[in-house]
Length: 333
Image (tube, rainbow, N blue to C red; front, side):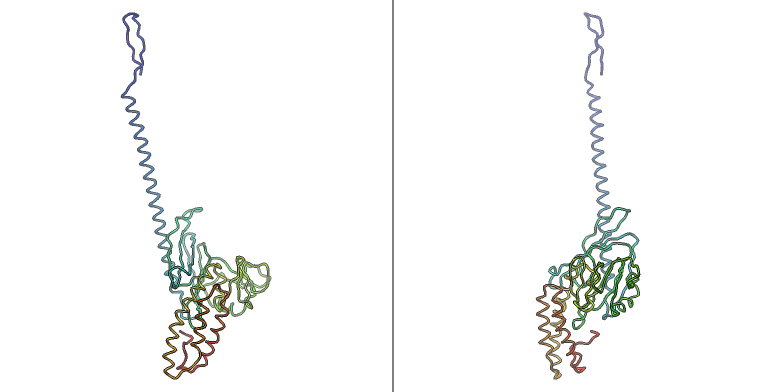
């Protein structure tokens, strides 16, 4: 601020510059208000974003829990199978994981969910929801708006559990055996699994039941293996479908979990043998059952299934030939 002051000698007014302390104080006040206001606005925006993210996590965690509850009705009484489709309003992505060593003895699977709120952005992934009483065979990640699931019973030799297959893509089964075709066509909800002939065009994952090279998934019914993602996994019975529709790591994990459940059930059946022996029922099932338990406990990969299955077939043959009152188990157990 310029302040004019008159000196006696010259008679002239000479400008003298003085500091206006009040003006500086006002500028500092405005500056402080701006900084403080900006910081408060930042905190408000950050808090709002965190609230939104927490809300997204909570919502997606609830969706994962609901998904687990949907699996319950899929469990069947036997190998007849059930199927259903699931549609979501938003594009949804499911993440699956499996660990046979966690939560012993049965291990566990985990699922987490996110959905696409806007065209290019997925929301925050929900918390992991884990379960150890189901066997979901699925890819590590699946996404879309339309999902399909079906179940098949797994017997070795008695009912062990239900296998639940979950997927979202289209599949084309080339030269599939009639038994496979009947199994799938019986599941009326599975509209996106097709059985084209060699000349038909089929849009989807190509599954070949012969020696064709141009395939996404190769199935060898003679070798009882499925090759996908550069890996071979081995199957017995309805595990064929589990091997086709799941990632190799999830398949191997769940097979080991199934063998643990088999061993626990087999221990119950060994106790039952003692009961039926009181009816003068004699057989060598118990010895073979112990052999199966030992092999299942030493399983290193699905490749060991063939040896376990061979003993299972022997037990099943002995059980089928036994008198009605001496049967260890029934096929509807």
